[in-house]
Image (cartoon, rainbow, N blue to C red):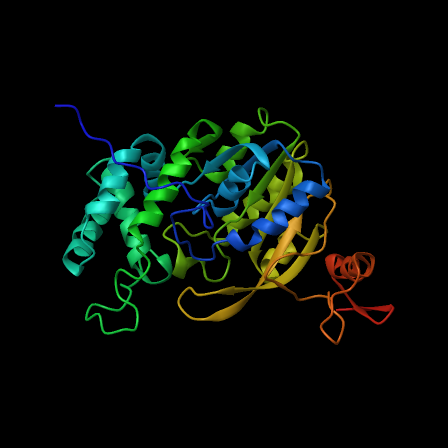
Length: 336
């Protein structure tokens, strides 16, 4: 008997692109990365993420035709298994999304599959997805939305819109010829790809957080790991363009001392509601435009006191000292 395929939902416009919720997910930076690519004439080039995670920016760039190809890499076996399932086992994955109950018993089964890791790529990939959508803030080692008693304001199904998630998975699968997926250590991935990626390539590195990484990720880094990444990126990645984002820790700023950078506020929901301070570093080859999107520039101001936006020229003038690590007061610079 011929296997029935899952009927695709009616076509509609995607608003969110990744099916995953990711701690510290950088999807909000997509608008800024688009501007960065435009200003640096990188449109129709390639885009690389050594720490892909939810791959929110990569997918938005692909769907909006900013890049010709994306390279998504993640050393995490569960995360890689999910993306492999999206690209190679699309119908089977979508059936699981559609048919698996949203109950504590079903969640416990998926948790066991995730922990045992002996059921194959599809089983692990779906278990990772299920936990990501039913755990608080998408943290794989986190608690259930609503708690085991399901007494919270949000229940286990609060982030599991089956139709929408299936639509995203199917939309991504249709683009699979333009998606390169790998599972390597970030530095090995970079070493393997630098000779092949064209000069018209933007590499975005978003390593595990320096301070909170242990709490948010299964695969967190020690200081030496962050140091190795910084040395390689700043010394070896010279033909392509790169950006690196981190939590704004003094040790990280020291590793990237002398690089172009900006510091900004970005809201998160992981673990607790807070506004995080982040820092982004840029290769010398990049022209760094002012921030756009839902961010607060920590160094400098992009609005007048009456909250009216400055002109483009004035915004750029005020942005430059912030990028260099200085604060602009009136028409003078005050070192911070």
